[in-house]
Length: 255
Length: 246
Image (cartoon, rainbow over all chains, first blue to last red; front, side, top):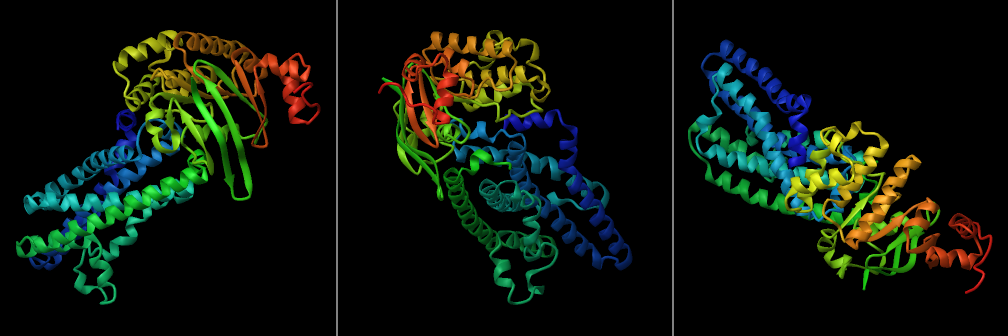
């Protein structure tokens, strides 16, 4: 982690990039929700709140995933992985360091957007109360599971798999019911949607915002599914790491 | 006592046999050279010694640790340097050294960095980004990284490649001194025959993934009736001449 923190300390473009997209997203959706409120009156207030809540919480997942994947890619881009993998650092220790960087990057990336929503669009995410911590935890774990999948593919297939670090999670967004309830999805898609931990978090968020209730059933489902996703991702990582050691991909990684 | 024991090491990629039943040992405190042309299997052998690559068959023991089962305990007591693997370019030399000191769990990090900076003449560049260094400076920094944990086994892949003769000589002098002072075992892959002759107590000649000969530089010179190792290397690489005597 020290290596990444030292890098960020002396690179303002990297620092800027952390918060740039979340703030930009918040500006776009904040203005959209303000417009809806002005046109449709009070009926759009709660719709706007769920929209902004969805934007912010989705950023938590996205920044967690990218924080982990890109920290790994930074090692690859600097052609330093050869040194890292011949040090006594165990793979799970490397993953823990990536998780640490993911938390730091997620907090630095989403906090400006959360403050922007509160200051300019009258949306206080913290009004959700302590349950927000549980939402954050679930979304971050989901981000780590996807990031481990990305890292596994990069380990196995090299830089050809790099674009997945930016795009893979977006493929899950339509099924995660970020901005709409699962009930509006076609019936045949709903089972897949409910298999995603993120879906249960966003359903729970809407219940908290619209009905003022905490849906413990959704939270429990999110945690349980996250354990399954994380275990599957860890297994994939372990297998791909070993496969890379067999095929020699660790020697030429980055090419 | 052998610091490194390689027994029937084989690595196969599909139909390609990169390393073929290679066996050799490196006694504690020795400097063993791995010599061979491009594609002879030197880098593949070193990668397997470091656990970067899983052998198809065979066994490697470093400092008593079986690399297949217990590589992390061995890696903590080893280190590695290659001009083909970079250090993060935007981090300063000191930050890079600190990163690796933490990875190798080195105690009293600042003291260790200061000592290496003195010994390898790095004090003036400690606060410069690694990416802004000259080739010679980068090599010295890579060497400092490789010595950060006071390794008992040091693997060097062409440590003086792309260095001018003066800097190359300084590095070789430093390696000789380090080995004499620490009793470290060095495995050196190199194309520089003068370097191998000067540093190595034993040489393993590889060709097409197989050990084709081994011995001290003097023994090889006598065996092939040559005056320098370059001619021995060419004899083996081009199948020009067999060893004079078994």
